[in-house]
Length: 236
Image (cartoon, rainbow, N blue to C red; front, top):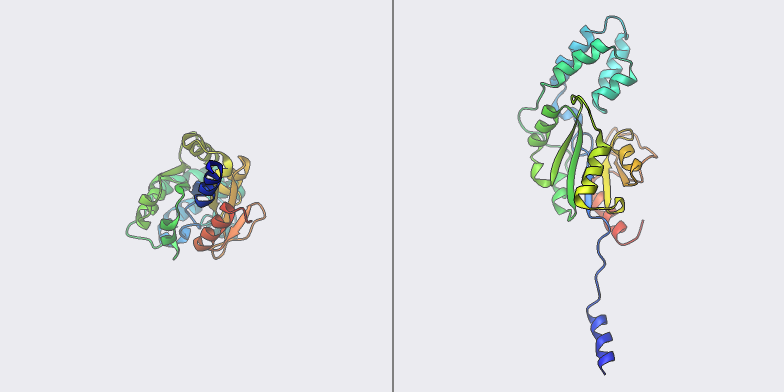
């Protein structure tokens, strides 16, 4: 009788599975808000400074192409890609470090979904600290994250996103399988997550080119919620 009651108790009160995904690490630009939403006029002083320091190194078309690329990638990676001279790099950085967003930003239309996520959330963004911090405040999303980390381009010894991801894992005592990295850039957060064994999700916002480097792809944060539910239930 005792044994039967024991098994009846187990069947009546089954142990609920522990969710596999405990923490989400988000990118900012072109993941939660279009980078260009700050307004093209904000970047014009930096573009003019770069153009004035060009000294014939790049053609007008090449300069225009590089400026368009800056909306989708950190300034230093664009400078590397287009072979900016040291003078051009310094001229651009002198302006970029002083820029900040005034007023408010809306971001993408699904940011309210962040509040529905039960997992701990961190924001890790690459860029100039003053500018990136002002974007977070303009969006009004700081309180939705445990911490906001800026991978500072102006830092004398820049550590990169991978170091911040590893820090989050260590301080939160998490394994890589309990974390997801969500962002758009295959050469930034997607690459950093892959390097340390974290599953990566590319947000296919308008204009973002799909990459095979990401583990999964979503077009919205609503799709992200559905994906996490499938992962926690063991359905891929």
